[in-house]
Amino acid sequence: MVSEFRSFIAKGNVVDLAVGIIIGGAFTGIVNSLVNDVVMPVVGVVIGGIDFSDYFFALSSTVTAPTLEAAKAQGPVFAYGKFLTVIINFLILAWIIFLMVKGVNRIRAAEEKKPADAIPAPPPADVQLLTEIRDLLKTRA
Image (cartoon, rainbow, N blue to C red; front, side, top):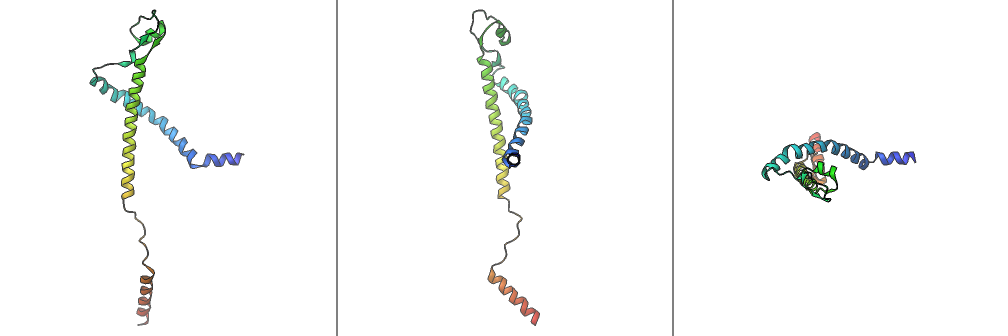
């Protein structure tokens, strides 16, 4: 059982998945900063500085607060603004990842189109035979 587990762990797919998760975790911070610190301020300017995160419906008459956090303390609320913000963040993130994958695919395609520095193919058998005959004739003469 231990050797079977060891061979399972050693397979490329498991190792690749682990590396992907670790890189993804580190990459999350970069993408979150890009979305929150670079893209969302621009989106806020374009849409007039609207912040959806405080949009909510009070589900109780006891909720009278103007901000979401204060309203949550007063009673139940339907916080649709936070949901809209998450959807917008997701769409921006998906677009950025799409552009990155597209770029990587373009680089890979360019690498595949490059001529390989391979060893030239050997000449056909008849050419090899004629070359050998020529070399033999040279040495006898």
